[in-house]
Length: 237
Image 1 (cartoon, rainbow, N blue to C red):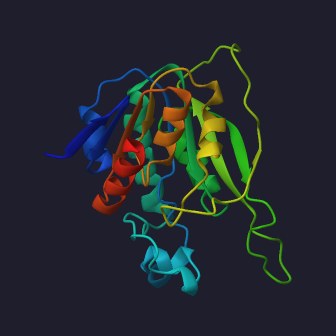
Image 2: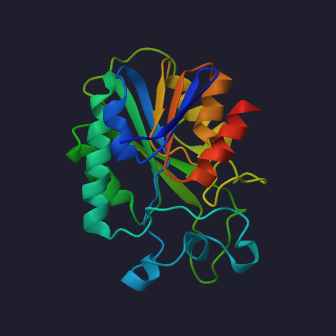
């Protein structure tokens, strides 16, 4: 097994598959915060097998960002895979440490199942309200929110600061990833974290930038070389 690793300030990033990299890491993380591929852009096998840009972007925006892998699983394989990486991440997390996993409405139930299958204590759901800037659908409710399913590695003391239970902010004007999210959103989610953060699906490095802003050590893993390079450049800058 071999993968590329780089140290940038208090951030360590790895180019490789999360299931292969996680067993090589040292434990003691205060939190796991990540945005894994949702595998939710289709209800049939042909729809799931489409390129991620075709599933998650309008035609005028296709080609702006690299594609990403791992987004073709059905519900059963998504549950099994999520349980695997969440179990390995929990083994690296300190007692009482946090986990926060992004998902959308389609995969919200199975993500909460996987969290519990992996042994985490499920604590709730934090909505990200993307505001009315989200694309409207005539005759339907606007698909305006994504969600963070969160929990803890066993009991967690009722002590320390409080973070919001809902975050309201639009998607970033300038994105670096097809599914890019605001750095400020990640900073808000990290408000109750005071130690090193593990991100098994680094993407373009948004969680890492939030950790830099808050002075937290960060370990990120990304399997796509194009996104690893984007994250490396953003963290170095």
